[in-house]
Length: 545
Image 1: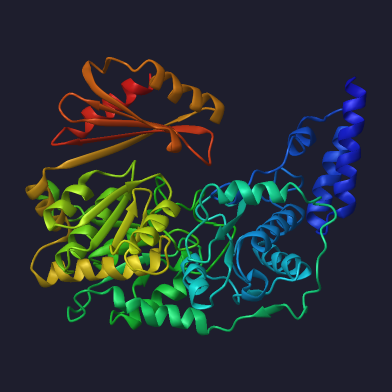
Image 2 (image 1 turned 180 degrees about the vertical axis):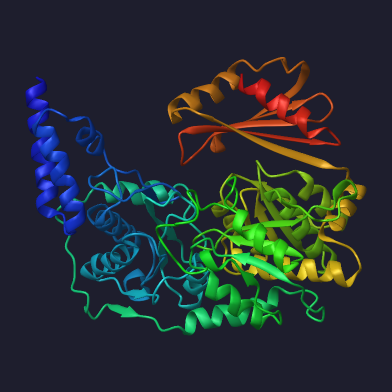
């Protein structure tokens, strides 16, 4: 029986080899086939164990051979499924077309043009941004062009070996359920080895000029709420991504001097030579930035992830009488609190709306209540924030701010997706206003704590297969613990749509658990008010055990 299975696997792999358009991927697949012919089938079998699943985050995996990896055959199949869904579901999709952009990772350029060629073969117009572009520019341009959808080829802050494929709706927000399922079903209808593809110079394929990125930059200053305040010194890293030039231009347009940059990380480089994991949240990823910030006397240090839709920040550590000789990274929630405080103090109207996610801090709701504005909590993932903002506009609510604790922020009404560039502009204003008022950014956080209590948050990840993580959440829902770490559990709330369960402990501590949607791990989140952070960490460890 094993021989039959091996023969079938080899036949399938050889068919892929014949269809593979890239020499490097062909060479890799040929080596895997040769190894399988010698009896070493494990790696080849894993590559052909199924197909890369399309979800609300689109596709994301290492660039390599086979249907379980990112390559041109997989991308062409995804583009065909997207095209079919557009023709079935969106009015005038063929004429309105799809806007396409890419980052600077391996094969992003050919993945982008192949998407356009597949769509053109289906009769759908495609418009490609020139060169590598930040994801926020792509999302912003969708509504400006009245396009039916947008595609960005990026793996965001994933490791260097990865690439990805993300789809945006005509509103400029990311796809949400059930649209992901509908597209995935159509992807499955196509044979990846036999996708019709048009020529690169097909009349339905056009290249945009730089006017759309220039228009995005020209629009960025509107996020400033105190434009009369002069700027301060800012340190910045693009983390080898595509945000560097756009950040510099946006700062200039907003009336600020361009930031002092980490030169080694300023230019796009898909190999990410100075960071093993190009995510501002990861330990060590901002080390070069903090050195530049210290040397330049910056008021705040800012970091984009490689596609510039997220923003990390660090400030001089002035807590407990320190003089700021060391720096500390702000948590995603702390950055969110600073934005909320600034926006709510400098805008008006009871129609204002702020939105965050289930796993982000509950402090945003209290801040909104204090200012008499609407607040909502939605599922994990910025796509849901975009959806709420769009839906509530019809009800007369004016979206002014949304954030998720994983460094995603939207401080403008467009695009309806996280935007690390306009967020950087507004954070520069927050730092400038603090200095103008004779305080520090830490002082702003201390003032928030004085008003609402000192909120502390913590996270813990436990690696395990997604199926085991789902079972863990289900077991807690079925038989909730009576106590965690010696503290009584007062209530348990399930959010089935988010695959999340929330435990409230005596004293107001909140613990949450959910499997990751993109990685083989379960994430635990803790929040408390005026609690020792070490105690919150202990409770998360107790829940994990």
